[in-house]
Length: 224
Ligand SMILES: Nc1ncnc2c1ncn2[C@@H]1O[C@H](COP(=O)(O)OP(=O)(O)O)[C@@H](O)[C@H]1O
Ligand SMILES: [Mg+2]
Image 1 (spheres, rainbow, N blue to C red):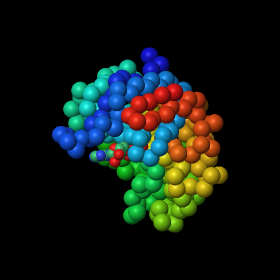
Image 2: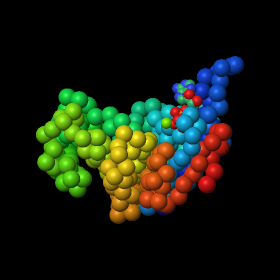
Image 3: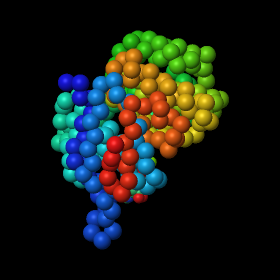
C-alpha cells in the first residue's frame, strides 16, 4: 500500500562472544509514501547501522524489513543487490564521487552496470543535471566542483533509477549551513512532489524543520 519502508523489531549485534556489542535493540520504523523522516542521536548510537539495514546494505541480527510491501529479509545477496538498484537511492556524508569520471559519467555509471538502454539513461541524466542546477558542470571532474555541487551530483546519482526510497547519511556534514539547507530542501521537494519516502540521519538541528517526523536513537532504542 502506501507503506514504503517497514522495519520491524530490528536488532543488530556486532561481533560474537565476549566482544559482542548490541547496537540496535528491537527497533521499529514505518515510513509512508510522501514522508521525510529524520533520525538523530549521539555519535556511535547506531544511526548508520540502522540506515544500512534499511537500505539492505547490512543484514540485521533479527527482525524483518519490507520495501514497498515486499518482505526482503530472506532474499539472497544477488536479489538484495537488485532491490537496491531498483528501489533505493543512497546519499552519503562524503559524496563518494569517483575522481576520474565527469559529472555526467558519475550519473551514467550505475545504469551502465545494470544494463539500462543508454539513450534513456542519458536523457534522465540530462534532466537531473538541469533540475539540480548542474548542467554547466556536466563535463567537470569532482575536484573542480564545490562541496555543495559534489553533494548535488551525489543526489542526482541517487535519483538516476528513480528510487522509491531515499536514504541519506549526514548529507550536510561537509557543507556550510546554506548549502546544507539547499541539499536537504532538494530531498524534501523530491519526497513531496513525487511521493517518495526518505530517511535522513543528521546531526544538524537546523535541518529538522524540513522533515515531517523526527526519531531519536539512543542506547539501542528508537523513540519518536
Ligand atoms: N562493522 C562493525 N563492527 C563492529 N562494531 C561496529 C561496526 N560498525 C559499527 N560498529 C559500532 O557500532 C556502534 C554504532 O555505530 P554507527 O552505526 O556507525 O553509529 P552512528 O552512525 O550513530 O555514529 C559504534 O559503537 C560502532 O563502533
Ligand atoms: Mg554514522
